[in-house]
Length: 336
Ligand code: ADP
Ligand code: TRP
Image (tube, rainbow, N blue to C red):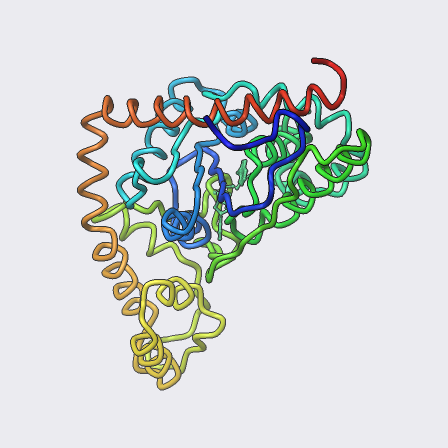
């Protein structure tokens, strides 16, 4: 039994920490996903109830190949597990294993002001980057609100790009609660980690859909090739370099401790390091930091049944919670 609502009053339960977050399974998970989101998720799994999922319904806004979608979804689950998600402690599931979330999306759509969606920066940004402007892409934030509100989540650990979506989820919760005069949904809060925006190869936000990402488990030659592509200015070897504006330094800083960072910054300013050396140092950090997890990842990829079993069990638990919240919403609006 879950404790998500009081059936006598259909009121949302008293607030206590429940962490929830999703990652689209639309490509290989990358350093931005790790430092912006996953690292927080792993830290929080011991701090309170945690629900983490692979957002494959959301990924349908960009991926239209069924095998690719299934593979990305599996790989994202294996990535979480390899990095240390403990399925005995946190609930890991596939978004589509909880179809109630689509039902809840419809109920929420009827309480979503058009203006909210029209103001969404990420929709405009994606369309500008040639992602097809489907109605699914436009209403994406409402499915995301259902993901969050459907589990009475209190805290949503995400990167900075998702803060506006969180504001929308709060607004939708308020609007629905107001419309039906009942506190059906909990208003969630965003939680940012220490690296809310990780730059990509081109200096823009790293993203699966922008072709500028470094996957977490890439190594050897392919890693070298990617790191080689990180955009820098054209200063020559021996010139003083500015660590503050350098993408290589920004990425290196994510891995380095304070002393290593200070030392690298000093070498930049003194002209004692070229971009080639800095890239080499970054590459070594990536290889070394994820070495153990990479081995676990390869193991899981060759044992898909282990992953599938974890997702199935997680999905069943998550579904129970979301069903109960969805029933609460149905009852509030009179479609029960
Ligand atoms: P992508 O933009 O690569 O498709 P998602 O949208 O699925 O990634 O993001 C999953 C999580 O990772 C979200 O919490 C998001 O804020 C975070 N995230 C994605 N890219 C970055 C980044 N470059 N820096 C910090 N956090 C990020
Ligand atoms: N929209 C999020 C992203 O692109 C992924 C996501 C879907 C999500 N549903 C969510 C994140 C619910 C947090 C909570 O990053």
